[in-house]
Length: 128
Image 1 (tube, helix red, strand yellow):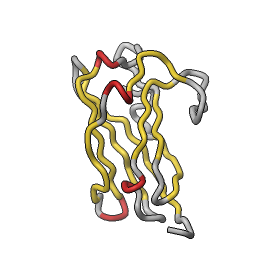
Image 2: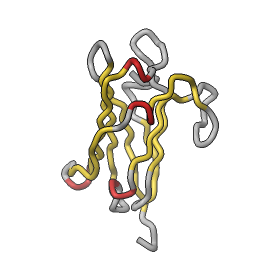
Image 3: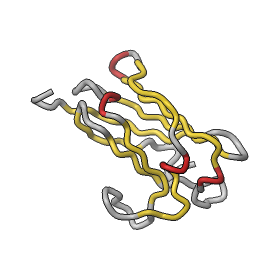
Image 4: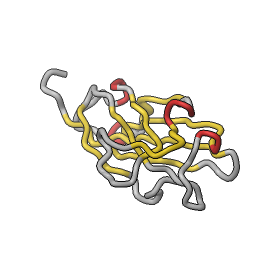
């Protein structure tokens, strides 16, 4: 599970723009999730203001989005590093003034699947 499994992260984003999602993901024992500890990762993005219409979905490549060691820098504001990173496509956030929910479902090699969630408030771009 992530370091805050019961509290989705709430972010402000721009419509028609890709969104970089970062997380520190731990197992039930508090160990960082590693590539070998998962068998699959799927995602869906929902437009909450359009009857939860799915605006993006698919699977993610474990070796691309899960890191076996802590990463730092860039857009990560915490002293502890992150070990999950993915870019959600701009097409998943087409409408300014709408709220979106990005759900990542991680299936571990043992145990039950668990979610990572972000609530994303899309703001209008004058040129979109």
